[in-house]
Length: 130
Image 1: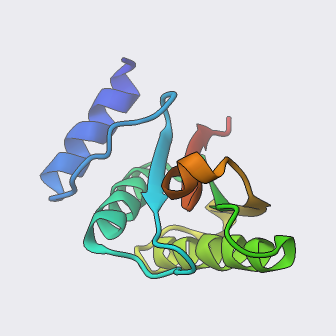
Image 2: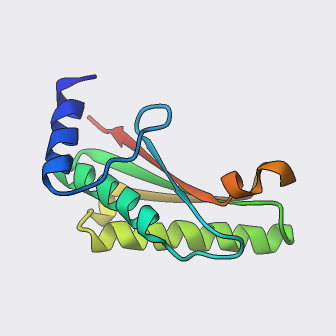
Image 3: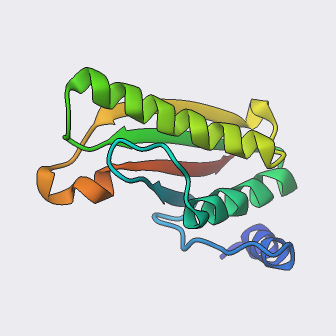
């Protein structure tokens, strides 16, 4: 763990955030119910943790990637994945992240029926820009 990452985690904890264990280092996941773009308390905690790190590091970019499961048509899933990504990006803005730090993408439907819940997500990827 780098010094900067350790400092970010400490500052986040001091600010009262609940840290989400990173997936592949620098990623956080926000999950949704079927056909929903509503954020529950767990999702809000994840987004706030990412926002805290982004505010501390204005050179960081936050990639907001929306996904959907295989329920429904391709067009409907593209729309719900876009909506989910937009809701998360809007929440980052409300939490004080600069609009210039946020990059938003949506991928529509992914996964298999067996992994539907895991497919209904937004992935937040944090990367440093020199």
